Structures are given as structure tokens and as C-alpha cells.
Image (cartoon, rainbow, N blue to C red):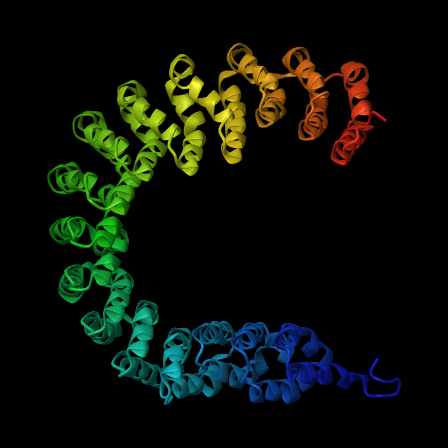
Length: 589
């Protein structure tokens, strides 16, 4: 291929160099993605001596190409000769870790972290650790941010003098002049704390944590909150109060809503990390404040955590705390001005019923559920309906159904089709909870109305819904209640509704069994094979193919086969195609 007598082994590197220098970015990208193949062709020695230096020299490309390169190099250990030569991959990755594009840097750091585990302790100190130092003291902030992600992977496996140097570098980066670097250090603080010895966590990490948590930039402070969870899990209980809590209290009342949001978002994790006593004394009042926060985003994040927070409260005082401290705030949130807050609360509030038991649920929670069921925001109403099962377990469905049904009917007829769609999905769940009589009386007509909805997605979902209902209530119920109405639609003037009949039969045939399908459904399908509209006719062929396995062979031969043969000579191409396909699938030829 490279000339009959030429040096074939040079060919792959020649192609790569040509493609890497090509003006077309896509070609360069493709050649980078084939790096492993090229390295295999070159062998380990030439990969080390030719390919890697070449790659290191050409790092000035489009971000997309560099991203692919950074990813490839992370899997290159065996291609350069295994762990003893893995340090050869460091120069190109070091260059990639200093580029301007964040995505490329992050991928380079990810690959460096990956290959750090393949270094022996000696190689780690001789090759990897100096790289981390060079990055940490680089002139550009890009290299310093990359260094933050590498401390924790080399720290556990180096000697104590090198450990001291690493800690010093991390300290320096935590107080760097550039906010981006401090942000990177704050985001890795928890991870770094986990690999440090406990004494150093107390002496070094806590002071860094405190400094970062009161940084002038809120983007740094909020990352310190995240680190707080890791740090709190590392410290013994008696040190938490003095070392962590002052900073956490300060964060929960921070002037920036983003920091308070982060506290609310991590609240359950913080609660587990600090233990029951501090939860009772400190976190309960802090949680109340977050639920009453002036920013809707913070209230929504806290509302999301209500159930989890209440579940994890200490058993001996759980009910008292919920009833006297949490529930009053929850009551206010039910009528919050912001729909995201109400929606977040609605997705978890039902879970409180299992914690508080029947009497409290009926007295205190039911009025809140009902208020949310009547909320003007469809999402709030929906979140309540989708979590009904846990309340049902506690108080029984009868008590709920009085106020529940008007809300369901309203949602079922909502102008937004996605809301109608979501209600359909909850129908089988509701049907199971309400029982067959109640369902027939109140909700059956709704399910039938959806079959003739003007949105196809609704008609399709309504068809699936019918199948699930038949599985729940049985074939006899279907025969008396559903099938007459479905088959009646076969004569509807609108061809879309006639097609819905066919879709319903496809879904119901298996659930209803052979007798009902043969006696009641099949005649309707066969009659529809003469429909004026080609779409209906080819759906007849598809339906016959679908219900064929349910029918016995005699019916297939005497009733189905003649109709399919007639459709196979139809003038319409699609009708012909589907009829022929049905004949071959059902082996009627």
C-alpha cells in the first residue's frame, strides 16, 4: 500500500502526520481517534520515541481535537509498554492540562488521575509529583486550576516530606489571587481532606475551609459548603461543634442566595454527617429559615428536602420537631407565590403521612393535600396525584376520593396535552386504588373520551391505558364495559377515530383472550378492510398480523386469509405491502 518495496512500518505514522496536518478538522479528529490503532502498528518503542514527542509538539489545535487526544492518552498505558513506561504519557497530558478550554483541561486531568494509579510509588515521586508542582506554580491560572484535581491522587502514595510539600502547594492555591483557582481548590477540598491524616485535617483543612467559606466570591463559598459534608464525616463528633458548625451556620445565612441554595441542596447529607444532637439544636432552626428564605430557589431546594430531613430526625423527638417546627413552615409553602416552590413541596409532602401516622395526616396534612390538588398550577396537582399511594396506605382511599375526583377530572380536561398525558399514566394506579365500581361510576367516561382526543399522543396513551385496566379488572369487565364502546368507534365518520378502534384491538386482544377476540373484535376488523381510507385499510392488515397469534388456525385460514389476499391486491402501495407482510408473518401463503 505504501509502495511495494517501501518501509511499510513507516506508513501509519506518515498517514497520521499527514492527517494531523490536514486543514480539515474532521480528518484530524478521525486520526486522533485512531491513535491506539496507530500506536499498536508502531509498537511500544516507536510510540514512545516518535509518536508521543510528535503529539506533544502539535498541541495547538481545535478544542475538539485536543479533547479527543486528552481522552485517548488516558488509555495508552499498555501501548507505551505498560506501567514502567507510563510516565512517557505525562508531557503531552501536562500541556493539555494548561490549555484555555476548560473541557480539554478537565479531560486531561481525568486522564492524569487515571494513569497516576499505574505509576509505581517511585515513579510517582520522580515523574508525577514534579508535574503536579509545575502545574501548581504555573504562571497561568489554567495550569493552577488543573493542579487542584491531582493532589488527592498522589498524596497517599508518596513519602512524608513530599506530602508536606503537597499540603503547602494546596494551601497556596486555596489563597490564590485568581477566583477560578480558589474555586477549583474549594471544589477539591473535600476530596483532598479524605486522603489526609486526621491531624492534618484539623490543623490544615479546617483553616482552609473557614477561609474559603468566607471568600469574597460566592462561587467559591458555595463550593466550600459541598466540602463541608466530606469534612464533617471525617471529624469525631466532639470536634464538629467547634471546627465546622460556626462556618456552616454562617453559610446557612450567607448574603448570597446561591450559597444558601447549596446549603439547602446538601441539607440531608449535612444532617447525616453532623449527627442527631447538632441536628436538633442547630439544623432544625437553620432548616426553618431556609424554608422561609426570601429567594424562591432556596425555598424550593429546602422544600425538596422536607421528607428526607424529617425521616432522618432522631426517633425520640421526630414527631414533636415536625409538628411544632417543620409543619408550620410547610403550611406557608403550600400557598407560596412561586410555583416551583409549591411543585417541589408537592413532590415530597405526601411522604410525611407515613412518618406522622393516620390521625395527624387526616387532621393536619389532608387539608394541605387538598389545597394543592386545587392549586392553579397543573404541575403541583400532578405531583400530588402521582404520590397518592403512600397516603392511601396510611388513611385509605375513600377519605381522599371525595376531594380528589374533581381535581382529576379537571386535569384530565386540561388545555395542555402533556398534563392530560400525565394523568392518563396515573389512571391504572388510581384504578387499582379506587376499585372497579368506583372507577366505572366516576372515571370510565374520561378514559373513553381520551380515545377521541385531537392529539395523537393522547389517543395512543389512552389505548395503552385500556390494556392496563383490562389487566387489572379482567376480561369480563372489558367485555361488558370497554369493548362495546371501542367497537362502536369503528363507524365514526372521522377516520382517525376508526383507526383508534384498530389500535385498541391490537392492545386488548391478548388481554381479552381468544374467544372475545374471535367473536367480537375480528368481525369488526374484517368489515373495516373495505374502508374508503387507505390508512385504515393498511392498519387492518397490521391489526390482523398483531392478533393472528391469538386466533386459532381454522379462523386464520377461513376468515383472515381471504381478507389479507384481497388487501394484497389493493391499489395502494402501503396497503399491499402490509398485507403481504401479514401473510408471510402469519405463514398463510
